[in-house]
Length: 187
Image (cartoon, rainbow, N blue to C red; front, top):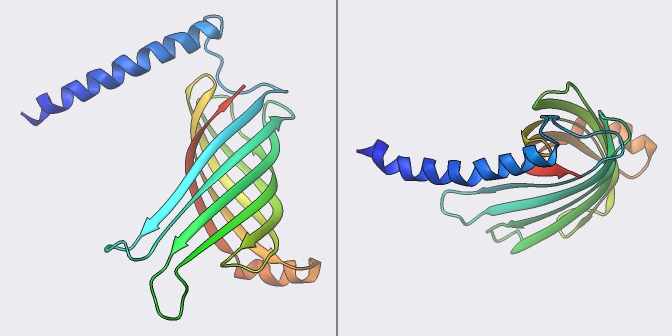
């Protein structure tokens, strides 16, 4: 009985994705080239979030990337992230907004639908919950192409804050991990 209830959803999903795949395949001239070429641009949106079981402490964030492929494997661009946290407590204020603007460069491996990548970013962080300062990070992730130019991605970044070159070296050991999941397209 449960299988019958799920069947309409599977049919609806298939009926929605099949025409999109056929249009993308036709747009690519009938061949199945996957991923970007040198000179292509890329736009992606990613998000992250968490809440306590009672939803009294919650946070969420969104990150938008815009980049240019310097080769079919090397992407350089700019990333804008915004995060919000609503934290309950007497010692802590109601909510915090933070943002960061970073330049990034990523190197992608392979030419299949699954493309792991590694990279680095450098920029600034600002907002209510942080001291306005520099931020740098190393990152790794995976893009998976669902269509020739459309992908989903997961990324992990190790970020650390700094005020000067000396503090960057000192603060590397005190960094934090940031995780995002999203989707994007090449054009």
